[in-house]
Image 1: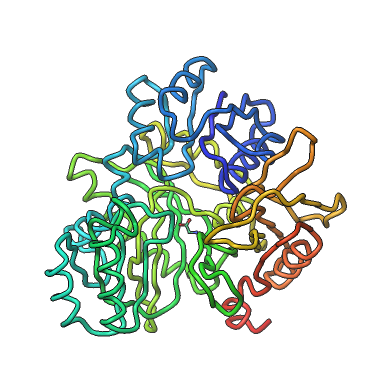
Image 2: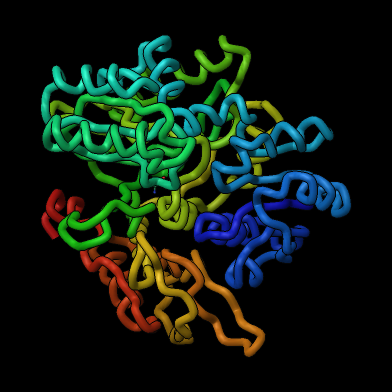
Amino acid sequence: MRILVVGCGGREHALCWALRRENPDADLYCAPGNPGTAVEAINLPIAADDLDRLADAADMHGIDLTVVGPEGPLASGLADRLRAEGRAVFGPSAAAAQLEASKAFAKEVMASAGVPTSASRAFRDLAAALDYVSRHAEPLVVKASGLAAGKGVVVCDTRGEAAEVIRSMLQEGSFGDAGRTVVIEAFLEGEEISVLALTDGTDVELLPVAQDHKRLLQGDQGPNTGGMGAYSPVSMATPALLDRARRQVLLPALAEMRRRQTPFNGALYAGLMIDGTGNPWVVEFNCRLGDPETQAVLPLVSEGLTRCLWKAAQGTSPTPLVLRKDACSVTTVLASRGYPGRPERGAAISIPADLPEGVTVFHSGTVRGSDGVLRADGGRVLSVTAVAPTFEEARRLSRDAAEVIRFEGKVFRRDIGWREGERIGV
Ligand code: GLY
């Protein structure tokens, strides 16, 4: 099989790693990839948003299956382009990717499908938005409707703060086109989990549930980031809860997308807030796998990933994944000083050769210079995943490995999985 993974972060490294484990002899390519994916695949120097060259490369290398990692190329129509040329693609069409690319659209779909989510209104007009906010309960949430690299969601304690955020988005264009429409919604209380569903547009196969850590600093302090770590499984995500997530969220949303003639095929990621009485509410939909959730969950799949992606890409029911029983995974992200604002680049990275068994280092933002030295090249630099028989052991292994990997300006959280630790008393 000839497989192309599109993207260049930790998620794509984890995908290449997992696909290589299942397909030792496959021709595996990654575009553009990074020094980590280069160990598993042949990197093609083509940007993830260069649709023409990606289509040419798929043709030239006779690609059987393309797996698209990031949302940008999906929203720009990469999957449509490749499918129009007769290729199997795991990833939604541009129309279906609107579930992530337009939060206003996602709210409409949820309303039509009866999917539980917080009450909200979308606005393009400043005066109307400010009037609505002046009567809204506190706290409240203001979201840039479009793609904003995980930065377009602001939780506001007061109406005044919300009004400032709305002005900055609608009047000053602080989020560019992504903030030309704002979604104002009620704040949801609870604990958020990431449910990642692989789907052909009708049926779903769930990856193990993960919990992300969006704030930069320990104790969930500091600015929001793309995610500073994740763990899986999450003990509060019981089979009964996942059954509800499937019946009340995933299947109705997919049915609504089919009804609109824009079936969703790929990874449907539901960020679910679980309230105090155990009810799931959708915080957001994403049209792709999560990062760093993917780095935490794929090592827990022992078999069946390629087959499942392949089936979903062909529009047939995704086949069951075989999951590792009695294994837990913790991923700690190592970021560069300055992230998420202006991360420093260029620090030389030293990864000890003798990291313990069960630890895998995924590259998120690295580059290998002409001198052969591995250097930090982005906000999130490495994702350190540890798999062990218990959560406690996986957490210790991930944290210890994060300590001994060195680069100037390294920033990471030592409390990944703290909620799970409190829940199970370790
Ligand atoms: N970790 C959050 C995301 O991938 O959007």
